[in-house]
Length: 452
Image 1 (cartoon, one colour):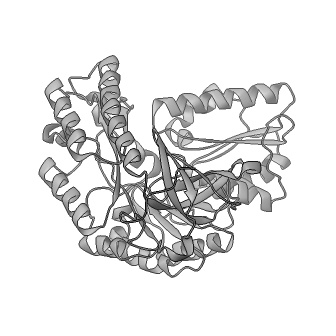
Image 2: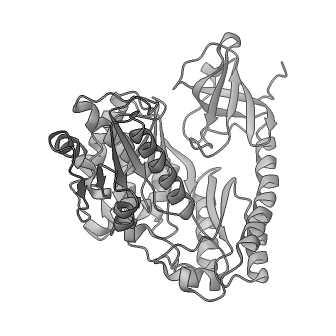
Image 3: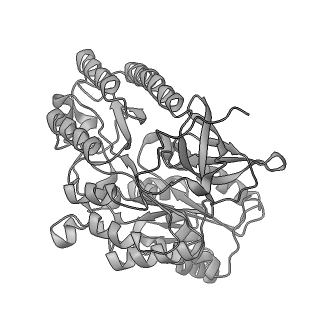
């Protein structure tokens, strides 16, 4: 989303986005500093852009984003050829930076302002996603004190985007063709607490439901605290909010959770999952877990593995712990060898693969709403899409056929086969007679799909 805002500002300045750096007058490297792998990728990209600059194939190189906040002095020392650096909250200064570089090409432009609300608007951004899908950030920063996380240090404290501005951006996105709106933040359930003292996500969702043109609203990064009954009631009764809930749990062992500083224990987690499944019809739950956290014993890991098998999350991802500089977790005793952390990650993913494949197989014979993303074989009317249970760029896909379709179209589909994480479907023959609205995303009593 930061990249889209940067691209939009530069287009208004007269720049045109190109997809190959060779020949570009300006290369903007938007960096991530969250984990070591992302930092390594950023350094590789910066070095490559500077190589092209030295060869006369790129004009100026400006580095922006999290890595600038994380390693400002190191960047300036390591890459003196960089023309400008902009911190996370200097994003909107990109046009001022390029103007300054045009006037004084030999002077490096640098700006790292503190966290502020003025830089939160995404209006006028240049969309880089599929035309019918858009991400909408509802807050910036984080107030959590998770011992392994660098986000509060990089992005600052939690700041809710004003509700009025969120709605305005959603309306603009819908007018621009967005059908699926994905709400994101470092912690979406905390929305509003910093400004009003109470969670406002449920109120925001009610207003978003009234935005004309939106068909699906997807919720990501729901921290397990502050999930209220009001929020669950809004989701359960919604015509647009998908019962797809992304809750990063990280672990289940109480001692590991305490060292992680998650603020929640196993009994609270299990009560939350029970509430979700009782109050929302046929929810799809996604979570992320971490293996190899400092001090994690084999017994504690086995508890996590048993929890995964017991809960049978429809969607799940696992990360091996990475000791990030300047985080409390990096200084904890009992650091788990990287090899063991990765082996444990692989064991969880192997267990989850069986669960996910079984879930996919259980969809055969059912009818589901599917959004068409793009053609796969246009001549034969085969398209790549996603069910409402699949988040963009994260989960599986649906190969759908039966008639000519358009990207962004949402159709009733009969699932006829499952291939691992993916599904194969035909457009329903009698779609006009089949309700596919809220509460009908699964049609357990529908006729079996025809084999064709």
